[in-house]
Length: 371
Length: 98
Image (cartoon, rainbow over all chains, first blue to last red; front, side, top):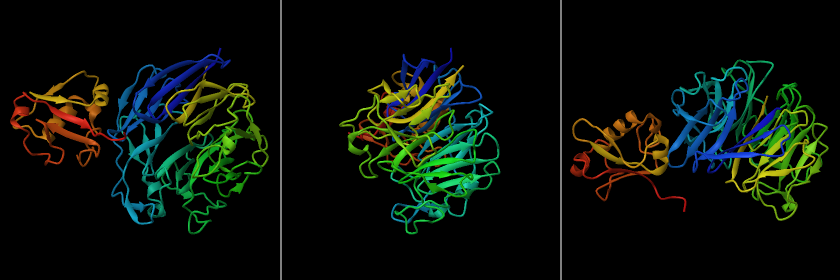
């Protein structure tokens, strides 16, 4: 029987949750790297037993861990992330120039075809790649060297490159997103990049429709339709039907269009999920009710999914990398909270139950569907 | 023989328990001790000081003989007791975060 492996990064270590295809009984492994912040861990689509993890600490900096056995054992690989050339400056929160400084890896995106090739999105925002399984990392400087780089400003969480989407139909195309610069696309395997933010409107920047400067929180894509993108922006849920050339708002009847996560049902490319958060200063769900909202129409019309989720006195957040979907016939949806709960649904969101309740604050959730 | 005491997280990374020892040519300095430490335990590269600039990470401190050596020049000689192996060189994770 097939199964799933949920990879959970938290403020104090990594946890691996495994179950068979029924997704009712779970085994919990961890903490791995106890006491360290694990911003993200993800498995290779080409070799599910090859995992990569971003292990970081305010004291001791960045490490990258690699597993060749599905997370049973790990080995540290190279942790040297050095910007290409003279790093230069971006803007600080007050608009003054600030030198580019490496802080941590937010997101690791393994290649769709090669277990040894991985992209790393880092803070201060840049994209790195390894093609030797993490033994060495090189920056793809065309992104940071894009003419707008000196104008990028950090979001509240830092100037982080947090989203990397590889186009399954075109190996040269990739999408990334940076808080708070916006979304960018390459069509030549990372050599050159263009901002893809037309249609976004952000009131927190001097020109609300500027080419860059938007606080994009997350982008997602269904692999069968790589030109259709969904975005949870700081405020606003957005959709693009032309690979980011333009965006339109699809927030519709959501109780709040602020949030962090967004994901797409594995079998239904027009079914998407978000978790509305009350506001950017409150960072908890509206009315103390933890609700996932599902749209079966690609946005605009949303329904609240509440069964099994706390509907009173709930004031957790769900961070941008903390939702994932499996690819079983009845799509599984998973998300983690800053309160340490990881919730799962084996019926596409109709009903939910906690897989674990008391982990450290959850930073990221990924899932692997195993044969 | 230089005795080095690492903070718990770095001991876990290096897969060691208790003190570690390194050999250094000539009069030991912070720089030469860290060079030897990183050569013996490559996983520690970048965790105590920057890969490129070799600057001490902001929340790491160096103590020995009840003195804070964090701000001494990295090529300054360490105390004789450290060089003689009678006192350890401490790498400390700074108190921070409550």
